[in-house]
Image 1: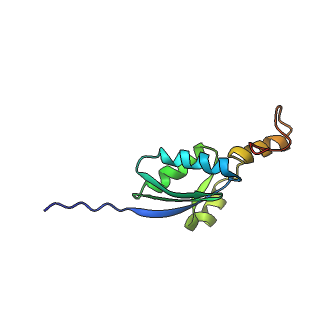
Image 2: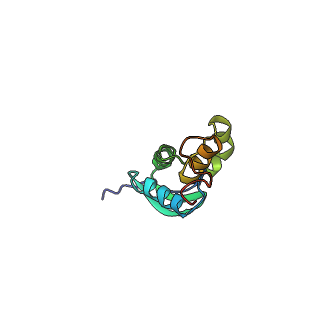
Amino acid sequence: MNTTTQDVRTTTLSIDGMTCGHCVQAVTKALSVVPGVKVKSVAVGSAVIEGDGSATGRSVAALDEAGYPAKTLGDAVASSATRPAKSGGCCGGARGAAASNAPGAKASGGCCG
């Protein structure tokens, strides 16, 4: 009998730049295309995923690419010291653009008005 045991982990991610339901949808979409990752739940500021040992790294990279800096809750202190803060996401990026007087930026901020 040949059995294979996969190391499946449940991980909670802390996600910066999320402010609304649109952000939740964008994060859910970004995570759902990451190979080997099962999205358990997404809420403003966090997500719970399930996957193998490298799923967390792939998920963090996908979220960073989508404009939502993420870290595992256990890495929160180390990550904030080594990764510069950046505004991102739908509303966070727009608010940052509005604050910098970027052309075409909405003063009300983001997709939520």
